[in-house]
Image (cartoon, rainbow, N blue to C red; front, side, top):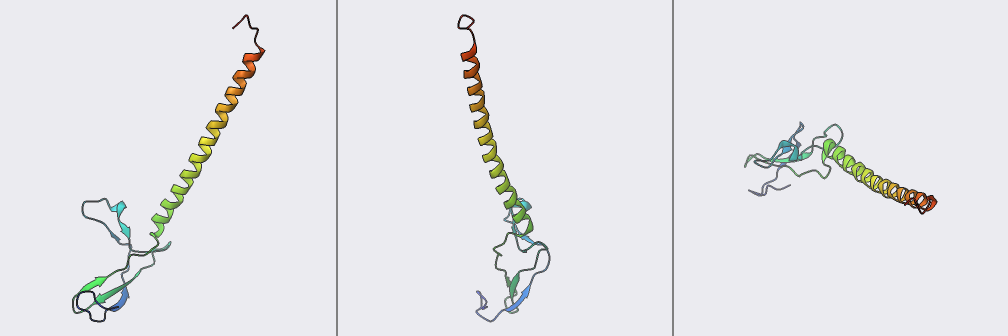
Length: 110
């Protein structure tokens, strides 16, 4: 890869550790993880010895916590769908029971 600043060839390597890029003023949980996979595999990066700059492409996988959050969100959606169906069925059952009880009462007791 060529350096975006000086145009010279960059050296390929990795940045080890579970780092995140976090925008100024934001909480660390909102950062972009710079490692991928379950154990935080270090992503490839490129270093320019002349400019002393590192270029680090952001990995597509959001890392372990991102994967966990995605699974939690999916499960929450499924739970919400099942809950709405159950509440609709429960309301329908109550309504049917109410109609059945109403029909079996003596009309003079109403």
